[in-house]
Length: 187
Image (cartoon, rainbow, N blue to C red; front, top):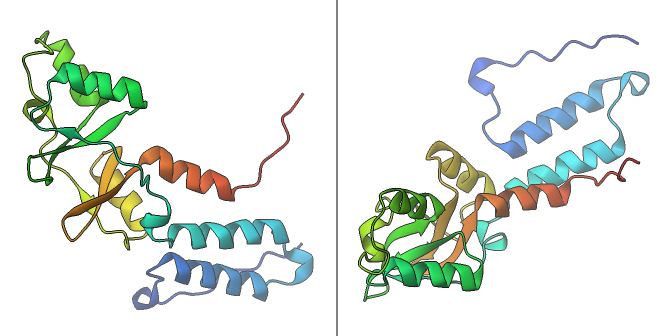
């Protein structure tokens, strides 16, 4: 086996997107003699599919079935809604339908740690005020970066100020796992 050196890349010509990185990778792989290639066709197919996945619009990944809680709902009611619908998080909306916050497990855990009365406190009082919203056309990659940089697990997808869906970190992970080959369970 011969070792093929990596091609020289000019600093001002570094790839700037996942598509460029995939192109550079495939171009480099094509320049390596077939006898030295250790990447299988299946691995290349997975890499191409991953690049395609991160370039998808988030609208193809988001949960479009929406559950919201109202700003005036008591925490007791919020927890009932979460339990009945199997929610981990929900946008908090005001009387005009605008998102005023996001409420999830971390906020509820902090609330209970303080020992407050769930019947007396309203959703808006403990919701995360700094909410993050993305457009349905933003890519999976852009949304994943935003969520990672801000350490958030759920994000609202809005268009023209209207809530269109929710994306969770689990949605993003599942999307990537759907692309990866599945191994047979080891016995």
